[in-house]
Length: 507
Image 1 (cartoon, rainbow, N blue to C red):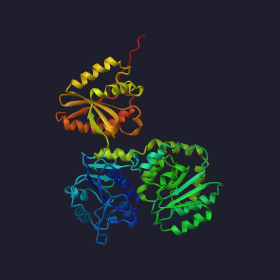
Image 2 (image 1 turned 90 degrees about the vertical axis):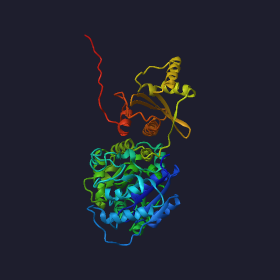
Image 3 (image 1 turned 90 degrees about the horizontal axis):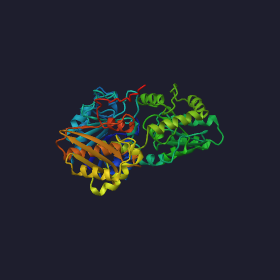
Image 4 (image 1 turned 45 degrees about the horizontal axis):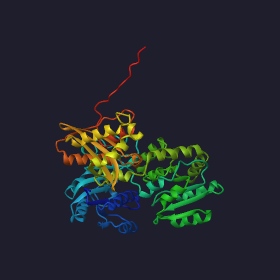
């Protein structure tokens, strides 16, 4: 693994909320499992979140949060920082001065390319996490896990040309329990019997209270209601009383969010990162915009059917009640939104991000004669033959002759990707001058596990290390092989030509 030290610069407060912190913590926990040393640097961080970092084994350094004469820097969220970008950059560099960091992850609307440029001497690489695309970045990779209609173009001219873009819900940073529980869920069907209310850990305007009142007003017999709030919710006592009054279940700062989502039939809540948690577990949601930076996300996601968002975004009790009734009375719509969400998010986004920053789990080795039997069985599997140029079964003598020729050729490189000792997939490079043609497939049974991008990246890194003469990689993909087309597009390959064929029919 390349990276050994990774730092995070993120804040959490009543203004900022906890969404930025939680997605960074999810990424940090996954890195920690791979032996990476993690350090969080923050200027604003509630004590209970600091305690969470310590419990999870991460280092934490708190910057001075005394009021200062902040410089606006021309950013709309500059006041969230509490100081100037230059001052914050100096403080952050000092907090990280005892190491050279492989990556610095910055997740803050008040920091842009000026701050990132100053931290270049502290970190070898910078990963910027953003979702509003309102400023320039000096970063090596940018992650925006949200869906937008203009997703592929919204960061044009906002990042350096070499920057790797990780865009869309495929990269959603979800805790591993969401991926695990996803295997148990099916699209919701039939009438809703259980509702989950959650408007984020802060919910300063108490949308939670309005939703509780709306659900109570509907008065559906035997409807079970779960309400989730953060420990610092400003209306906690009021919500506790309302839940007791109506017989609703209240969960404060719960660690069981994924379990509650699996158990529910419908959610009422806000936009933000929780959108993709709900989608991953197929939870249809009635969503209200509670912060301006959520508006585009909610609008575009609603158009795609990932959630239900009414035109009236006031979030008043009467509005919640009106649209909740409409949603509850339409089981077909609930099922459609549930299916659309499941299709959009598979829960493996954090692994895709790890691979993109060189912290994946796949090890590449060269194939040997000892792999002959496995290669023979894999290549003849129907799922592999279906996407091969030659779809016919391969006979054993032909396979053995082919493998012998491949292994003896210096320009035919046959590689096996393994994860924890188990074979994941096969990659072959055929080198001609300074160009290598790549072919790749995952071991049968591994196709739905999201390893394709990591396998390709690991193989490319192996090729870079052992074949310095190769300057270009090309791939030919069959027209009906959509997974491979998506794989190479995501990996940064450019389409240069498209081959069309047509069978001649004679009269």
